[in-house]
Length: 222
Image (cartoon, rainbow, N blue to C red):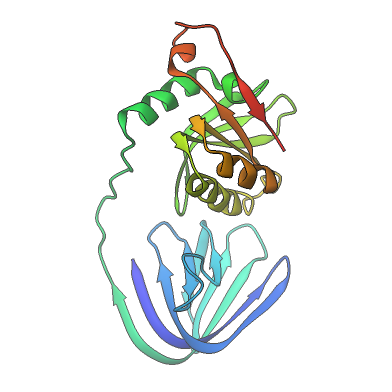
């Protein structure tokens, strides 16, 4: 990973045009090809970014980042470089879920229809540049659906799925991908937030998934 702290101007062109005026910023250039531009405010979200696959080239004024197979481009002009450091991060260890979440994921991967009518699994642990989505599915209309699985569905879980959807929808052909939060219990506040963002939620029971009890399934898809 390459970390650059620099006073710079960032220009984006592609689906629209945007300019970040000259200011001190942190640039993260990851080995998977993703590039993120952060300021010292605004929380976890970068001010601008490029998801892989992309090409990063040094220019006389700074960096140029181009999305492979698309017109998206970031032009970063350096006024002053404060720090430019590259770290070898080694092999990344995957996030380890607790036993219940892992078991839920395995069972729902085998029977994704419990997450929504007509769902079929495309892939488990669908990679994004901020972490893997538990299940990537297609619904009965052949539309993409990202499913995040938790033991307890909270506001934080909805926020996490929202971040995944922001990334996924930038990929070609996936701009209309929707999300479903699957959990043993979905908190009332999480239900309200999910529905306000067009995210579905479903409460599932391990005993039902194992076939040890009759189903009592509730799904809200906004």
